[in-house]
Every structure is written in structure tokens, then in C-alpha cells.
Image (cartoon, rainbow, N blue to C red; front, top):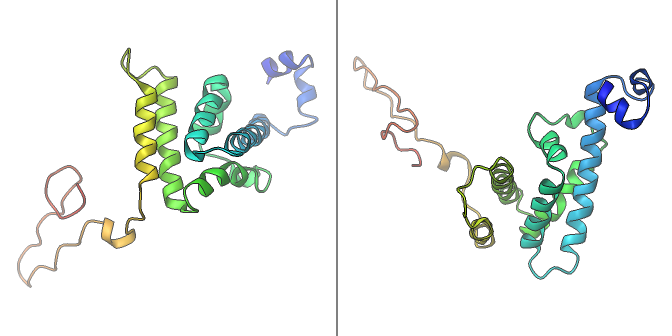
Length: 183
């Protein structure tokens, strides 16, 4: 809090006239970040021939130019109950619309963008990797995605009950190569 106050040119106790604690300051900054991101998304998609590509470019640019804000917004639990109502939804709406109002597909696309962005910010790609091509490949997958059944069809099937007096087989574990779940 002291460093923030110094940067603002005020004394640290003055911050507490406006914010209860550090978490309240962070929530206010996150809220402003969502507003900035929503503005960037709305500008990017206005008249865009490919709204998904425009959103990806805006997301990537936001994170590159404001990595500390991006990380504050995305690397810990989001205090949704403390954010102004609608601020997160406004930022999410352009992606939701670009993917045909499919909330699950929008979440998957956001997870892809978030993962790519984090890896890029953290310098985790090999030297010379064509990140633009990786982004385009990922976006192409979302452009061509069709709804996939969800729910029980994606969960591993339960083993049938063992006959009386016969021990049940041990349950399969992810990555064990056994069971009938998705691989």
C-alpha cells in the first residue's frame, strides 16, 4: 500500500479513506481492467471481418502492454462478488457473440487464449516459434467447432456392479490406460 501511495503522490493512510484494504484496491484495479478490456474488445470487433481474430489480437495486445494488470486479473481467484455488476459480463460478451452465443465454446476459447498468452508472457515458447501461426491454428479450431455432447457422455463410464461375492475391480485412474473414459 505504501508503494501505491508513493506512486500516487499521497501518504499511505490516505488510501484507507477510499479503500478498506489491499484486496479492495486490487478489486477496483481489476474492475478497471475489465472495463479497459471490454472497450478494447468492442473497438476490435466493430466492423471486423473476423471478430474472433480481432478479439484474439486485442486480448494479446492488452496482456502484452499491461502484463501486471493482466496477471492481477487472471492469476488468482476472481472476487466476483465485489466487482461492479456486469463488468465481467461486458468483457466476455464479444467473445460469446463471436462464437454464436455458445457459452461452453466461449469458455474453451478463452482458456486457449489465456494459456497462449501466459506462455507467451512467461517466455515459455522456444526461440523462433511462430506464435502467430499457433494462434491462427487454435482459432481455426474454434471457428470450425460444433457443439459436442456434454455431461455423462464425457465422463468415464462406471464399472458394472460386481456379482455378489466377487471383489470389484480397482477403479481406473487418469492416464493409467484402463477404463472407458476419453483419452
